[in-house]
Image (cartoon, rainbow, N blue to C red; front, top):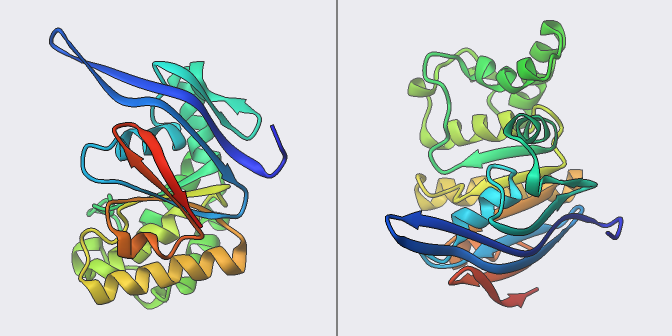
Length: 229
């Protein structure tokens, strides 16, 4: 695998059984993600976007085919190994934010670092730096229910960056935001990509959102049907 390829998906099929019926969510998907690029995977509902995201994010393994993240072939790994790789290599930004409402913004950002065994003092220092970076250091002791949707998504971005991931995986990152707030979040992701050379893979149905990426891969019926740079 070339050094500049961080993720490689080769002939990946994902088949689910619904009763006696087999449903093919992915049908021989091939995809390469280069280190430091901003890629959008765009497609309508039912195109296989979520399943493709699960493959890229080591959240699932294929029925057939292989998925490489750097030197790791995740296709046949046990869940314990997948969880370790996810924690070290991938930061997730979800449409629903997925923050824990009983924890403050600061505590939400420190949480992934706890699982990686980072000492408390270092966790606190880094979480404060990240919240400052997303413009929320003054709100760090507020809980998610005390924050606006845009502020919650910025906390989620800070949390995604907490373990210095190789890849940021964003699943409809502005889906629960108004258009202006959504544009601000996308501008921040673009800035993060340009200034820190962060690899970003975004899954979306929205053509307006996809235009922020350097490259768009169009997904339909579980395969890439065209690419655009």
